[in-house]
Length: 308
Image (cartoon, rainbow, N blue to C red; front, side, top):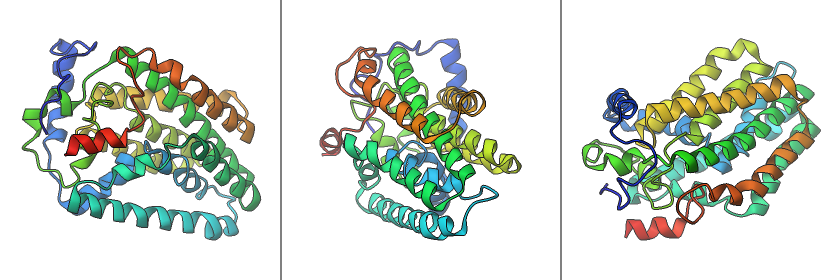
């Protein structure tokens, strides 16, 4: 994991007191090495809440599953097949990552098409409306609306703060640390990703899920908190973020999800509006960044060239 060519260029005050304290807190988790099976388990919360194909297709259905009045037909006809297919494909991607070093990146590139990103979340909403309970549909609406709003907010802040990733600024120190799925950290070290450490969009997505789950099933606050915590831990463990990045992302995602659940009606049109809001403002938000080009969407061609 060589130092990135732009390491040392950033708006965040590298080497300041806050930066030193943050890195000191982050180091134990960044230098921890887990057995491969445990590391594989950490990839699920560590990636699924930020990877679009899982965040907007699989996670919403999983969120709607435990609501008290959920319909059996929805669980067997929608949640079980989708979760099984998503987990099976993830196992294949992780196996390819172990063998070739390139597998997980395919999960990020599958929703590059705006039409797919626009349609797939509504397919899940439609299935929930048809087969599921009303409370489950509301939970999905709250989560998806919060996720879209959160990702836009996070993207804007990334451009303003422009903080270097651990893989860019601390490459030499972190390179000897064993990672079975090192690809996750490498993905964040390509040119379009190196300065997007603060705040963590994945951790924000995990907090959206946790708050949406707690809102619809308060008795599951423990698993909801655990999911968000594991998501944040995974982002630090895989050298994608520092602890401060994760905490900031969780506060943003959790706060937006809470505000939407408390102060706005959760319905299907709300999802569409927040989604269109994201897609319309995504390009203007890129102008906040000091460099040109789309930053958060992975450029698979750049990734391949980095690996060669």
